[in-house]
Length: 292
Image (cartoon, rainbow, N blue to C red; front, side, top):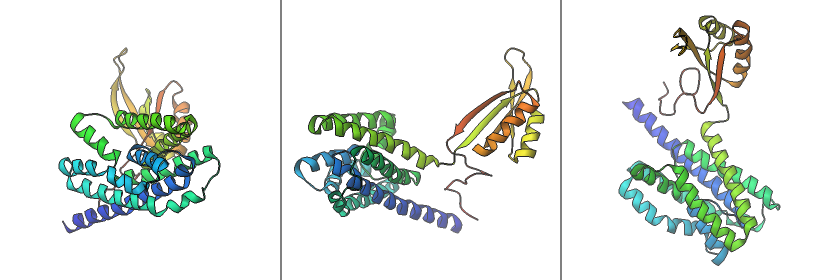
């Protein structure tokens, strides 16, 4: 019990630390890359940035104000742990935005397109760090969670609808060019978030259907050093039982498996797919497991 409690405390501490780091990075991205070129971030931050461009109100303060009804809903309908972490993330995020507002006076990049690229990458890294450690910065995160929990609506349509409205308003107020640059930044941010969450060391899952499954499995274990699993299969036409070879490998190991299979059975069917995240023996251990 003591080890479990210690591991739980360590997970929560890590969650809060990286939520704060991610919030700081997102705040820097907004002031260093987006604001100098009249671009927007997504969700509540985008609304606050539009008002900042129009009436020069502090972005962080407005984000905090707009989040009040959302946090009331989170307090009413979400668990206490999520509410507290999201509140902490919001405080760190909004404080970081207003504390780094001096960066807008001297843009990090003069070119708008490059600023969109860098801004998307940096904000994506910040958001990805937050999401990777199950944190939250409030805003549309709360909307997405509530929509998923109570209305079974996935995150994609919710975020697409909110950001679509923002792009329309931005194009109307500031012109088509800033809106298009914002769209580029949002796309790069979304891609970067996925990469940070999943990790850059992508694994491959391989399914091999062959009459020589036993021989192929033995060669993979001996020459590649990777464990193999047999899945019982049956040909739909021949009705013959087959052992389907299933293995998870790195990219470099994948390059070794192809010639092995080809040498043993050149007619084997091999299916290779990306594995977003692999947890367990020989790969990364889940974050919720305690260290012994």
